[in-house]
Length: 446
Image (tube, rainbow, N blue to C red):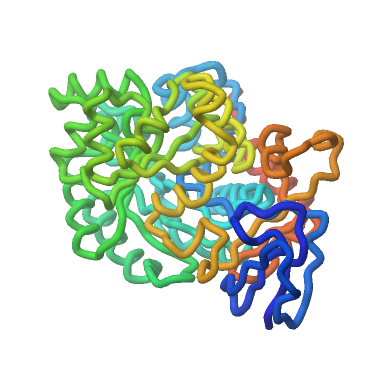
């Protein structure tokens, strides 16, 4: 069936003023201003909507929805924040609470216009060796695409790190499961609903041996690599003390400075490091909200792009954000970018590009992230009916500058997954109640 999304208020694409035609889950025609009605079988009246490409979240920690605004962790920077929360996660995280955390994070993202989500999963309590499978099941139930990152922490407090050993697995179990997950879920074909990257957590909680092993597996299976890097000055100091080199030099020493890699945060790089990242085609996931909450710093987005690096966008964990909302991240990327540069250098179109096409490129996708013929029909439709939008002149700029946070409609692969602001098939009241009950366990010792 050819579905015509007819006559929207605006579309983030050239030559689509009269809308978009979708068939078999793919965009097959853009209808320009003044063009006659296209060939179609059905119509969706988009006259109340502004249409964006489906947003792509390239860094998150779904499980952290259970510890948002936790009293032990608020008003702290990254390392003290982690030291406060790791024991909580070690005490209380289990497969049931993890499933609810994942369901809630994905639902939040979907309602904000996100169609593809990447989760940096590195915690594996004893009762959830199949945590990756749980994420796939929850994404499938919502009809979302997911970029799985099979992570690991293997350097805890006893060996000079800051992680909780109860969330770790033996190295041989980790590597065997990486092979299993890649074989089962890594589908690089256009239109796929799952891909896999390997994602040791960070230099301060993963051994050199594991970083090297992940790089070798990624080369063997032609998949991508992901980790945290350059997030704080504390990380720089740790790498200098532990390895005798800065984080990017360490990354290169373990075989990670290449175009398979995208990094979370990427804040504290000097000019030479920015040039090296660009030369090697490394992706950077900008996480503006988390960076502000933890006072980590401001990513050098424009210099990185100018050097040739890929810039995407992520919400980061829901305990350092503290939400899972991609439109909020877009607005924050614009605002913090203007603080670093100026009002002309960082525009609303930059922030939206990072959240869509840039993010898609970070996770190795060329079939999503842009409204164009041949791309997947992943679309987010927003209305301008709320009071906050009244008086907005440029519809697309209005979404960003006036703080849009909830999509009215979301389409993924040609299927509606949000209708009238509600995710299809989800009992939101029940989800809120069950997740809230699970989260209370993490406050139990207060």
